[in-house]
Length: 218
Image (cartoon, rainbow, N blue to C red; front, top):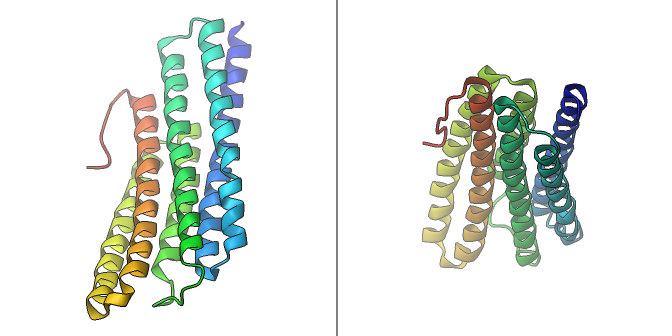
């Protein structure tokens, strides 16, 4: 395999990552839309579409293995390949959380919501942007952007704490609210975990460009 064809294959991997991140971003957006509107049909579609992310993860990992097998990559090339395999794992886990949210939609399908959902969609909007920007930063090797995305994670954490306090008050005020409030807390936690996975991607970008291994989830 020539250097040119190897670089071409790396470029194709980047395109695959962009495609997978777009699927994951849409899955999360759709799961929250289903939650807001209590639409179990849409929730079912999210669950069904989980195979899209799973299959793409396997496809990208197979391409990475073939790249290593067909040519002895340089050290930096190896970092690209191994970082890519870590990123697709993070993306797949994000997609799993979208399915987790869809399952909560089905659990709450007959319940009247104790409050209008405002902060959860806000969290989702930020998380979706983080996914998109983290993959762009990786593909472009943009370390400055990777650090900026991690500041968005702080915003997610702040909203989560605010929602946690609010929902706790609902539970204390009326015990009949406990189940539903707990389900909403699970949704917030899933979104927070998605944000954490995007910071993992940012860590990969920083490591790839600088060779420095850092922990942005501290």
